[in-house]
Image (cartoon, rainbow, N blue to C red; front, side, top):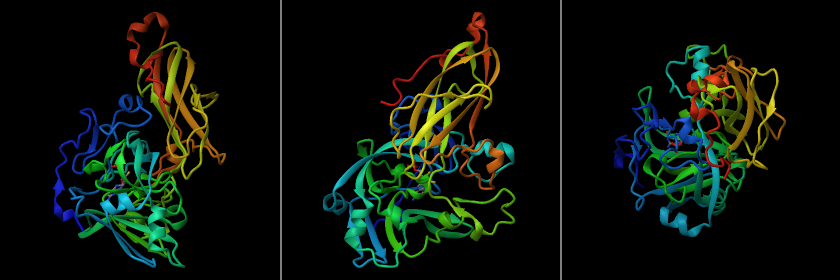
Length: 394
Ligand code: MTE
């Protein structure tokens, strides 16, 4: 089996676009600016966001093994060749989203100093190709009493003086769903090292942290994993809990993506011309639910306008929406809220959902713009009035 000790890659850009926003250079945590991201339904590889918790391992695919064990009748070791040839391959479009998306808005409510200050950029939509986890579990034979499937990556994490692999687990019920893949391709090409080469898990509908990269072990077990990234990180706590007072047992371990939506265009602080302006963005429901409705307000939530959606929205990918708003001159607050197939909508304010790790900010996204009368339109931001990406949902 190859391990992270094979070698690690230096974060020299990992083939990313020159304008990629690097929020944490140490592990190359990055995402694309909104004007590049919004131009594509499937995010090009050079723009796809990256989230790592340690150095990127450089693995040798010819030696790499995925070991399947725990509560199974037949433990197996899968080479990359066996993975590709012994199981049917599947393609699936799925959006990856980091649970820390929009942490900067929570940080503005109350500081969250020790976490990556993500804005709206750690989200991307990929076309994944690989094999179904359920086919592998079926080959291994899940035993009675199993309730969860745990995963380990080959990257070596150091936290509080301890060394361990990145890990996660998902309920067995989810692991047996057809959308959960062991992926070896992103957008028609083999994974790049930063995205988990040679093989990663993709868990559509769940936070990105459960889609373990550089996958090396699959362990079927009764309980969720005790790995740091399941038992401490990626847990959500009530607002009164702090890093000092936290009892880790009491938090809720994040799984399904919370319903969210973001305004891509115009951007915060833009200057627009009075009259009809196009507003665009994405919405995403978690856990296999669909986006049913997206609404935009130009008066900070007093009245709402329906956005256009592709019909129907796919449960595993973001849903790109657009609307035209007739804007009067002055300072305007544009706000978006999505509704999902469970009839849920988003919380109003980030302050209502503040948590000390800064996860799962799905409060209504709100931006401030300045609208100038038509006759002074030389000061308006051309890019934000009626310039449109090519048919966003194609
Ligand atoms: N897997 C491993 N082995 N190590 C990691 O640090 N980061 C997770 C997940 N899988 C991570 C991992 C997190 S938090 C996210 S959001 C996604 O990978 C990001 O995937 P990407 O870098 O391909 O966009």
